[in-house]
Image 1: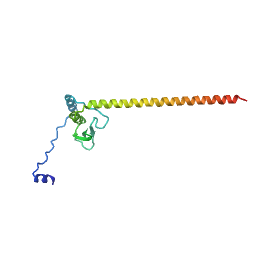
Image 2: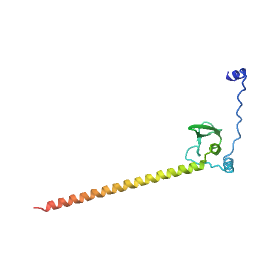
Image 3: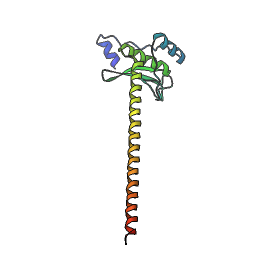
Image 4: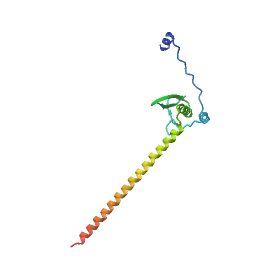
Length: 153
């Protein structure tokens, strides 16, 4: 009904999307290197930053998205994670982002957080050791007082 209404109103029908030929994983990695882009690996199911894996779509199970101006921008669906990561890296470059620098900054921030946690754990352990030493000293003093009290007639 909508397509007919558009034609009747004198509007051009929407152009059909022509699917781009899919790249192999190796081709996507080579293309990224050729363009000077970095495909940043992650622990998620997508395997790369900006890539999500969605079950149910056997042809193009990888989806690429990037944050732009506070909202999520859809970049497309791809057959390989590397191809989706390439789309993410290209979009980042077009937005003026250096994905590798962002990832390095994120890693440095996480390392600083981890170091702070380690310092906090060491300080907590030292405080517990001081408390245990103080309790042991108090016990020794109490025992000594009781021993002296027992010696008095």
